Length: 452
Image (tube, rainbow, N blue to C red; front, side, top):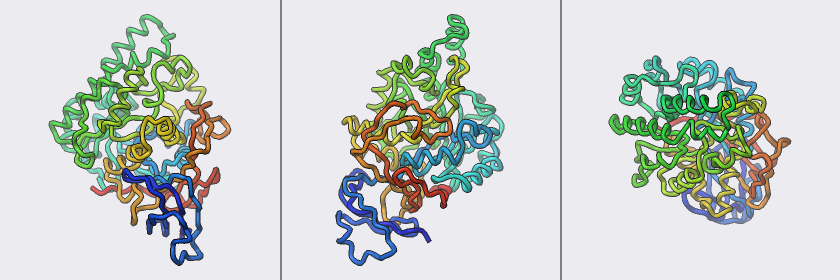
């Protein structure tokens, strides 16, 4: 039987409210929420309940990251389910949804279930995995169970193994007949190829990293996103557009419909809110992501769209590579980087700088993913829900340095940054998995289920 906990006197941030209260956790579930701050006022606290005094700390729902690449199987020199989930819980991420471009690509249910089995053995956080789409696995897509798989991933631009879906007839069939959410990466391959040739002709192998947002341009993103949204409108598809990066794309998304009724939802990643193209001069390939981090104007437009609810979810696209791989020329350096250990501290830093309220941070990182994906009993601090909870010290500082990085790749684009908050405790299914730098790895996370 798991330990029972009484989280006493925290500032609870949940469902647009911030109040002082206490939470009783028992058997993995939030049993009771108390709207007062003294544990002594809880009548008859049982002897077997461990009290965690939390006055002055924020208690948040666990972050649900709907887009990560944990690299297992096949790419485990970069990261694996154990190392990256450990980094995740240290950063307050209690559930994640992992992408299919591992090796081999997760294009069949046999390969998908192999990943679930690995996670059951290794993951400290809760998990789900996308089934990948290709030009020739429509049968696998159609037999996907909406109850226990988060979604179908479609690459509508960047080629990843056998996962570029560039056959318009296949796209139409997927959009018309898929039984569950389709998550899309949108960049137009033809536009990227044309831009690449221009820069190759000019610079040969010495293309500067600053050219990345010009090669993988806003027009490439818009063209592909417009196609995805257009198909979804024709077929009434449940579409989720991942890692949006440009001002141009924001006009495609609605902010008038309540999130629970949206058929087309949109995500932005922390790195596109934090960095802009001026940072390539200092960070170089460490901030080379696909889609590219673009201009300051794009960054500002993304933030505005997030606050206006055109963008629904904040995620990471956590995608580690070794530093040796990243320290290469433009065409050789892979895109992507680690993010899950610091996504919540980064967003809370924006809160501390008065860019966004803490209630909105919780909405976009915890509530909205749960609503978008219809995650069962997670994403909120509610009685009867799984106790995925995070305690944050709002005045302790977190400096990002190599010795405290938990990513297998051993680096971060945030190195040298000091955040003004610190994650102190992370509960996953009521288990205190992370406690001030110490981990309890005796109990693993659970497979996410979906109310569909």
